[in-house]
Image (cartoon, one colour):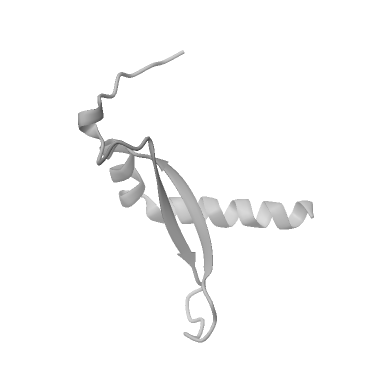
Length: 74
């Protein structure tokens, strides 16, 4: 089991997690069509937030993949 000590000085504030709103819209969709909104819970450490910011396309791809998987199940 791995463990890394992260002090509170590496956080933006005192909370453990941050909620990030992700708005999904296919390219070329008219502005009148509502966005599909998803919430993503992210660890509040600067290292994690930077990773999410730099890899947002991969995060969105995972959200879409998860959404498609749920539709296949139901």
